[in-house]
Length: 154
Image 1 (tube, rainbow, N blue to C red):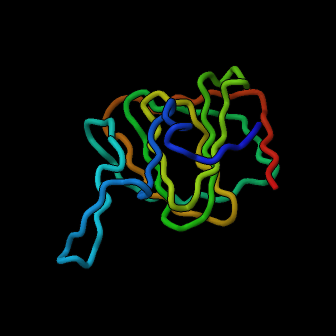
Image 2: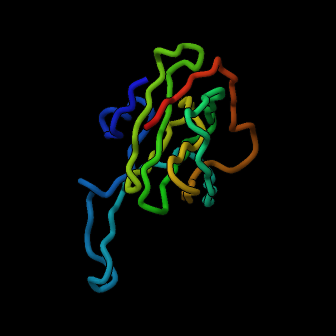
């Protein structure tokens, strides 16, 4: 599977890329800070904000599970400047629908509601992510086991 750079256009069918490049911004706090505004749209009635610590997986990375969230969107934004991978698909039973994106440590993603994706894939070291997703009643996680796909990374 080819790994593409993460771009707004390439990722659009699956959600939003969150990055400051090209974003609306303006000075705040008497000019001592810059606000980059309106970076993503949260699709949830009630929001949970958390920090996730993710560990790298052994290489080659074995992909055996995909998940989605039927009741809301889900944002992952790295808290350090390290590259990471984003793996999505249209249909987890159809390997040709899979797409892999290489994200910089300055890019986050907002998975649209019902987007099939793999759990966090960090490459180098334990990495922290700010996560914004739905909270509340109801099952907001659907997982499916798939035939193993191997991601061979350099």
